[in-house]
Length: 196
Image (cartoon, rainbow, N blue to C red; front, side):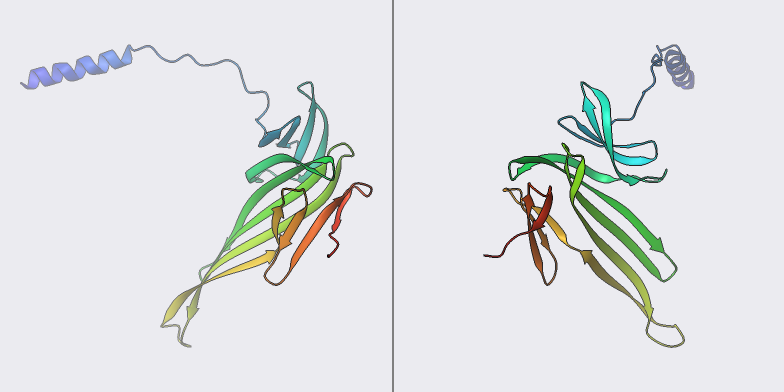
């Protein structure tokens, strides 16, 4: 019985070693794929910059630098979408970044959400919004000798929540205030909406 098991084991090993191996590809990727694409625009990290590249006939024509990026820059949930405001076609670029700090007694997880609106014909940024959420977990001692402790959690929010309305207007909402903006074609920017 042992000889049969040993023979089957050797047969499986030899069959596996003579199996056809996958051929390796000789082509290398020329450029990394963009993070987000819409129409002729691509959001990408290139040459040390996070940028929106404007393509013409499939080739890069121009680029708008969003921000300088180092080797550790990794935007998450990157989205690029088009919409119309005041009869003008605009583009919304949104992405988030995570960072944090950790010590023996305190941990901070920071999520920052960026929303930027561009007018491509004039290559201009017409609106920008930043919202930060900080989740703090902290160990707090209840006595002077540090014998008893408890873990406390807090969530701190800074900035405004960004909302793009169907008519192309923008709403920013905070705890105590709400701002509304409409697109002014003559100024090529968003201006505070007039109250009715």
